[in-house]
Image 1: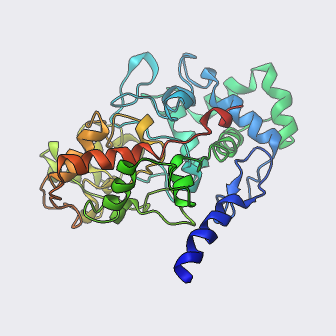
Image 2: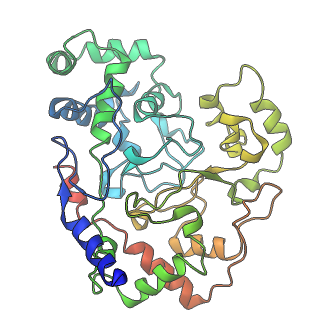
Length: 358
């Protein structure tokens, strides 16, 4: 009896959407809205201002790069490049992660060096590789001198003396509206057995069994974002062999994690540049898997071009190294099983992406 009720309860949870503030996606009642900082409550006006800033290339030093440049809705809010490119074609060290559902993540960036979306929104703007503004003061002055923003910041924050905190708060408020949990898989898990193919259903079973994907990307009804929010060394970073030397550089008292994250070689230390804990060498955040089919290439360095190559990487047990996560082992998947896993991952593609940006 209980087994019969569980699917029905899940179906009801998905059907019964809960109300959220204007501008936010409508969520199933089983999912709590993302946490909003007390000092940055969401309003429709703030979300609209944040959306405008998100797409405004004038936030960069030469008016060529906006947040959307690396987080394009057409590409699943990523950029489709191996590593992100900023002003004058300068290249970073890491693949641009999707912004979609980032509001639900405990930490931001591949190494978790930003705690909130507000923290994250500030840093690319003054990064010399990304948007290149010299300082927060220069950003404030540039935006303050754009007449159209004067009234909008006054309306949202009650002042025309805008600061970097105001800019970051508006962008973060907008990013908290970029949420989607509507995919064929969601209809399947709610009880529609025809929502995904038989191959995808077989892949779902493998995901939770032989393939061990759920160790780091587990699905939970109340948190269906397929990430454990933790950091793991799966061996991708082991192309860099001088970790001992690089770790000593990262541990210097004046080391700046933001600069280290963009320094070739050192960036491969991953979470270590934030924590300085040896266990975090080469460890990067488990990315969420929703819309993963839209955000190739994969891994923190974009080293895997396709979902098929990602599955092959895990099937081989990653790259052996002293810090390899204990859950990464050879899987022994057949070609058919690998194909089924890919079909499952494709079923996580949202059906409402076009509506997000209206």
